[in-house]
Amino acid sequence: MADHARSDHLSHGVFRQVVGWIRSLPEGSVVPWSSPAMSPSRPFATLWAGVRVDDCPAASRFGWIWSFARAVPRDRRFDPLWVQAPADLEIHAYGVPDHAPVLLEWAVPIGSGWRPPAIPEPLPVNGRWLRTMAWSVEQITRTLSNWVILHTGRTDITFVWDPAANPVRMIDLVRLETAADTIGSDHDEFYQLGTTTYATGPVLDLLLQLDPAQAAEIAAVFSGS
Figure 1 (cartoon, rainbow, N blue to C red):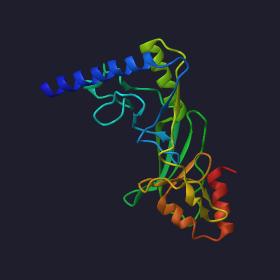
Figure 2 (cartoon, rainbow, N blue to C red; figure 1 turned 135 degrees about the vertical axis):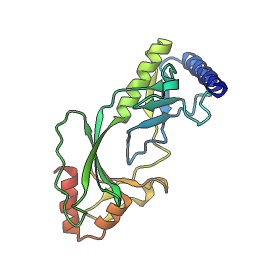
Figure 3 (spheres, one colour; figure 1 turned 135 degrees about the horizontal axis):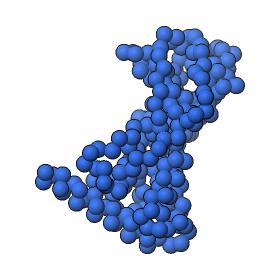
Figure 4 (cartoon, one colour; figure 1 turned 180 degrees about the vertical axis):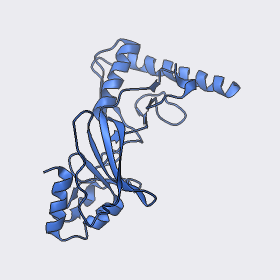
């Protein structure tokens, strides 16, 4: 009980600091945000996303201010820094159970009617599909703006996602190369293959070993063209 009371006190202290800081910003300020749950090569979050604002002097002990969650913990239901925002994306993941649970992901708008493509060989064809919901960068940005309006009354503050810490890895399957000067962090295991398609490192390794013509065919499947 004592730990819970202390944590609740700290959270409300951060809330007051955040509100005070936002109210002190000059008119028309642009506020960059980032999240350890997202990267340019995987610009969405599924179950949770901690949102950081480096310019803000207030933060939780973990370094972020807001916590976006599909299910807010019982002891945080009345914490204004925990946000249960509606998802705007469906994530369709393809993988092989007990071997590689996620090999490929497609991120598409909810209600788009997207249908999974046939997985071409030499990728594993005995896998299964799983579907979950996610927040896009745009959805988190809109929610932050609405949060500021609700708690401070300010409508002139603009939030923008700052992906600079994790440059995107764009993969060209036709030329069988990666843009070496835009590689992200060593722990970034997803690569963008198409507009809405993301793959893990093992899939990329396999594709880069293919004949260019075959790689181009698979690239067309992934990009939906």
